[in-house]
Image (cartoon, rainbow, N blue to C red; front, side, top):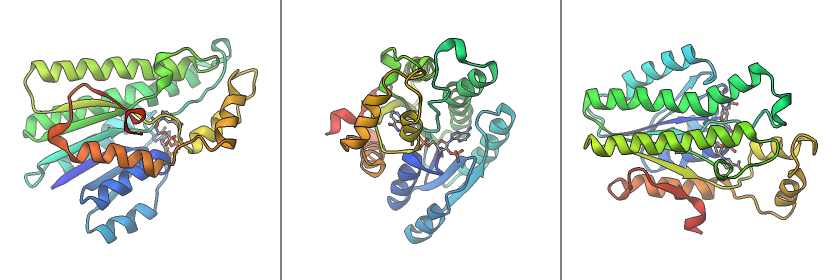
Length: 252
Ligand SMILES: NC(=O)c1ccc[n+]([C@@H]2O[C@H](COP(=O)([O-])OP(=O)(O)OC[C@H]3O[C@@H](n4cnc5c(N)ncnc54)[C@H](OP(=O)(O)O)[C@@H]3O)[C@@H](O)[C@H]2O)c1
């Protein structure tokens, strides 16, 4: 049996990854603040299970409790492989640094950086205890590698996620475990996050016109297409290269 724990399954890329993994016979556990009822029907049709856990990943106590419950359900003797996909994230607040409130900074870093750090640690710890092979995928962004006016938080949270992921991958390699930890960069997709980017004011986000053009010129990828690339990588588990930065741009 294979299980995937995926954050942010209510919509966007996370929903597409959940759908395609289930269609490939993987049982999925989804985490988000809202439910995606379509995934239940997809699970029934595919003959696998979909379980939803309502959780605000910006709340550490909720996250800890939720991941422990999920670990109890996923790491069992019939399980031979577990995927953890840290996909949930926010681009907000979009604004210059001097306009950020403490609350917004904290919520952003908690969701984009601390939550994937905690889920990775909790899941790998249980994987070690149970001796079950685990593959962690952290969804990143090209924004980690360039400075963007109004995206100081998004760029820095994703840059932190990159360094964290590569460091944990190095540890797993040196510890000679069979676990793998990778990054996946989906590039620009037609999701709610892009809608939020387009609605930013030019004062807060200087590149807003460029992102409006991406939509008008049909340059945003469909999440199903992007998810199909990641799912193909994940299903060929033996070929996954621990610590690799997988970019959708290399699969077009
Ligand atoms: N869209 C792009 O162009 C693009 C480009 C590069 C990288 N990415 C990355 O791709 C990933 C997916 O992005 P997307 O565009 O699919 O985003 P999206 O459409 O905004 O969906 C975000 C998902 O995260 C969940 N989420 C948000 N806040 C949460 C919270 N506090 N607690 C729990 N879940 C939460 C949302 O569910 P609820 O609201 O129900 O909680 C939703 O399921 C992200 O890591 C993003 O940084 C996106």
